[in-house]
Image 1 (cartoon, rainbow, N blue to C red):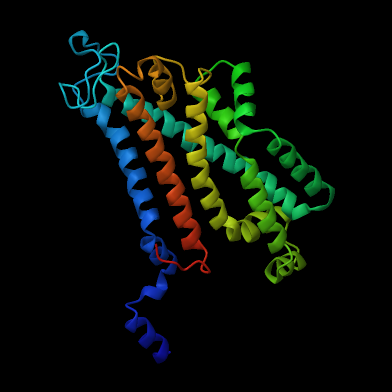
Image 2: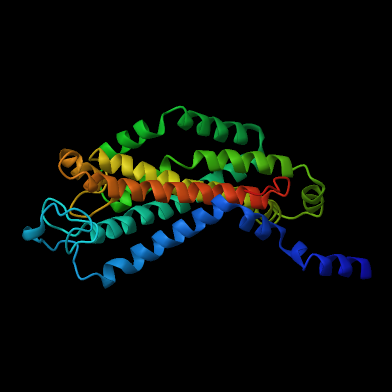
Length: 294
């Protein structure tokens, strides 16, 4: 007992939170965390404190370059403030990212949990379904589905989610199949607990770490897919702004007003990079075998 206390005192109590320490030492993960929090805060508060509205037209300052007039990040072909539209577009793109992540994670967890737990024909059929969907390139499957429905925030969110659940299902199935034969699972089954209890109370809590990592990476994937579809004209439609349709509208002004494409492109890059770095940091932090400093 005294030896344990001595060790903890010597390390400043750090042994209590090794995952947090590993995450905080991961420099790219900390950059990703601050980038994501900064984007969320800016998109939530920025449009409310700006003196410009998203549809306010300032004809005297059409195509104003950044930092050369009253519009901080410049204005578009109608004189609308680019900063306000960028932050409002961020609300839409981030909402699609988080909502699609939640739906795809829920579907993937249910499919993977059932396939890994029951195995046999049930597992085979479910995983062959996952493999069949994975055979289609995500962007083409997404465009096909988007062309069949009326574009909007809800429909694009659902379509993106339906093309992003397979990786979660594969991760969960592999983990559950391995845990299914562990002593604690066999003991719980021996005392007669129900399948639902065994899956939800015994197995699922042990799979939370890879699910969290996969969910974080799915946010970046969803933002990128929404941008693809909106850029090609099948996603969020104007006047509702999204980063993808802002890029679409900027195509014909690439030489005369390049900031119209560079700024939303930089926002997409920052968001996707931030979530990817965050996911990498969570993976390293939640896996004690990857105790690295970056």
